[in-house]
Length: 262
Length: 262
Image 1 (spheres, chains in turn orange, cyan):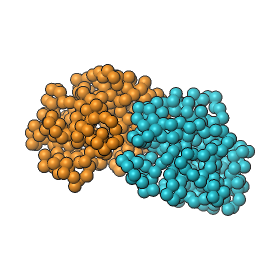
Image 2 (image 1 turned 135 degrees about the horizontal axis):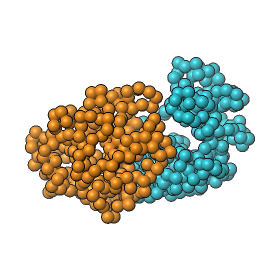
Image 3 (image 1 turned 180 degrees about the vertical axis):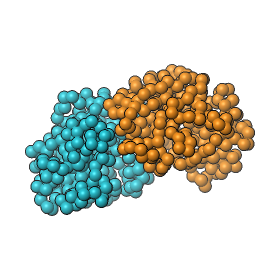
Image 4 (image 1 turned 135 degrees about the vertical axis):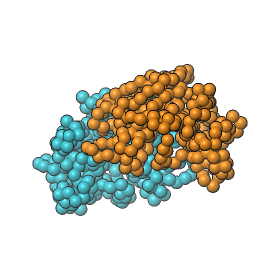
């Protein structure tokens, strides 16, 4: 989520954990009325279950949610998994279209500029575009603080890093990127899936061309944080050699409640 | 959830809080393999958001979930809000039909018998049956321990108490019933909705013909527990006169982690 002191907040992706997140974050409980939250708008980077299921828990809002998403994600959430159709029976949404490769501002949330970069990843399994992905199925967000001019790149799903994204990452003060899998065959070796990381749109961290290799090419001053970490990823065990390698590389693993000031 | 020592468990309704419930309950974490839970099957009483959203969080199971529901609920979850269509892209479900007014046993979970009573309440807002409810849209469950012969009646949504249900309540050792609203106009007075309790299928607790009046007619030995308590209900404030009235009536408000032995 992004916001500032006394500001309205923007929720980036609505995780299934949203209720715990609200409970753990006093700033998001302004208590101006019943069923109030500090969230002014919601921005989605894709239509995946882990980014949208929290919308159900936000259904009792007093007004339709300003919901920013691309046309592809809107199709996922009205056709593949019609969460927005279900929400229409409750608070509903006031859908705003995220433009591709152009800046946008979220109403009522001043001081922050947004830019969406289409990235190569994978739309949700139930997406109408699953077998023929299009630009806008998955996004990276570049979030810039207007006062400091500093930016953060947020990209939870990345099958590869293209030129536009790499440019944004090089210019950013903070990058929060796909930390799903350590190795490409992690889920297969553990017997939980037949799929490789790359099959489902995630660049693994280790190995040649992996995420760590990319991150090491960024300036040392760039803060590098892995997000969207799968429960099969060995870095979650802080005593693992992989967690150790991460620390030595100057890369952090995100944790709940992390606060980043640009 | 129901189960016994060393037993498999049955999840009754999949709440949006399911992840917190699993984390808080060691018995449900047998850890026989990755992504394992102690849940052997799922039983649904209707297709409401608060009873089904947890299914998304259970999507990474290693086999399809045995999922017990009526034909009406199945229609809600394949047409109105196609959660089961989404799950088909993950673990999927092995759907079992709950018969109306007849006993059923849940495979692999011995020692417990189940009976579904159709009740008057309200199907989910997105249900194909919303405007013309049919038998089976909403259920009460009578769960009987085969060894002790004692039964529990579970009914989170009750617009009225009919003869069959009243008979089951009178015969039960424990009743866990609709505790959604204290008064019929509670949400209107608080300005959170234009709907009365009865409009959305819930008998209020107070007043003539209310739930407390019914519960007071049950034997004193019957354990009486209110469940499905809305956040507008004053009984949630333990210092309120309403909570006091509840205590004096010998009626409990359910709490997280409650364990009931029949």
